[in-house]
Length: 86
Image (spheres, rainbow, N blue to C red):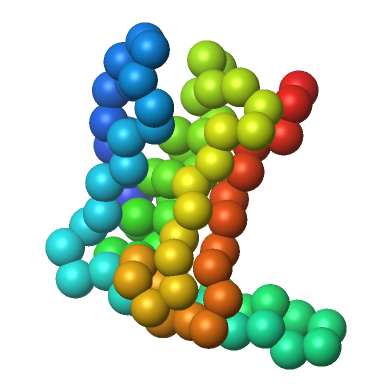
């Protein structure tokens, strides 16, 4: 099975543009030694798209997507996905 994930076009001078699949659900929980990210298919595809956006060649270190607790994700804490400098 092949699953194609399309990422929005990057426009020079603009920030990252993220899109969500309809019906996405993402939950994040933290214990003493684990971080658990649970998601339905739409949520997993949306997270994959966000990571692929951050992996684009012209994205610089420090750029990130901030997923806010009880808004984009079901969680008591925010989840930040950040690009490291190469």
